[in-house]
Length: 143
Image (cartoon, rainbow, N blue to C red; front, side, top):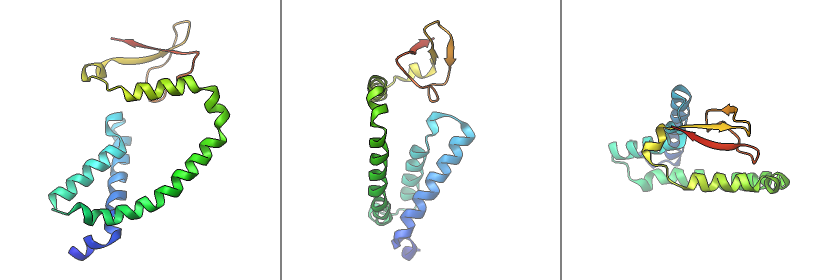
């Protein structure tokens, strides 16, 4: 068993299985609370603690994953750079989105419904995770 955990493929396999489980759980429950990345982190930490596996042993495979993340990040940067004109056009909604995500939400406001409305007051969509915030729309909280 120790030989299996010493292999770099152990960390890779554990990470992939944990993330896959998070994706399946997210699709089943359809809630933003079950973010696949957060579920994967919780599962990995749980497995490491329950089976008393040192983090350094797991991180041998994590280093392998990090090796593939650098080129993927560069590819993402190139893809974003090709859409620079769109980013310049929508700089304000992007900035508002960054600020909105950086501010912690108190637990009491999680129960409030977030609705996106047009200038005429029509509800465009009620789920904030599928709404696109543009300057022609405004976000309103309804309690």
